[in-house]
Image (cartoon, rainbow, N blue to C red):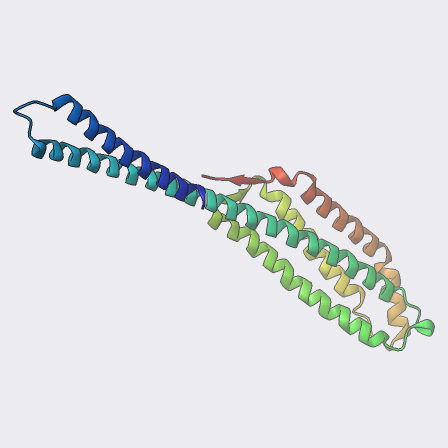
Length: 222
């Protein structure tokens, strides 16, 4: 039995006991009185009982309202937790993809694996999926307003999204070479070597900034 049901049961029990006590007191006060009429007493008792029941109803409604507000706050916290989890998983996927892209970009044609073309194609598809996931994260952040949750500093989230968007573009470009053109692959390797290192640094910084003070990045409204 939850607290709300227990409160209602206890309140109802107290109301019944109160009515019984009132009846006993009335009988003890008016016993032997010739003008005493039980009909008028029953009217009083009925009125008192109605007041008690009205009070019980108000109390139950107040408890229900508090319970509903508590549930809203719990759901809001769950949504924020889900958003944090998805951001964390996304960042891990980005770092894994970065590692794969670097390996493909640095692969020498004479020692490349037989499935090199397939690996490049796969990573291009992964980058497309990560773009979709990034857009989904943006939507998740906006949807938190439904639960009366808003970011304290939108710049932190905008920077996170922007950094990852730029990184995805760079990663995609780093493997846009012609797989069968050795000179083209060498050109991409030279052109994107330092840029990939800078991309890694930006990903680490954006993720670290987002996690640095995660408990104070949102405002929960009543």
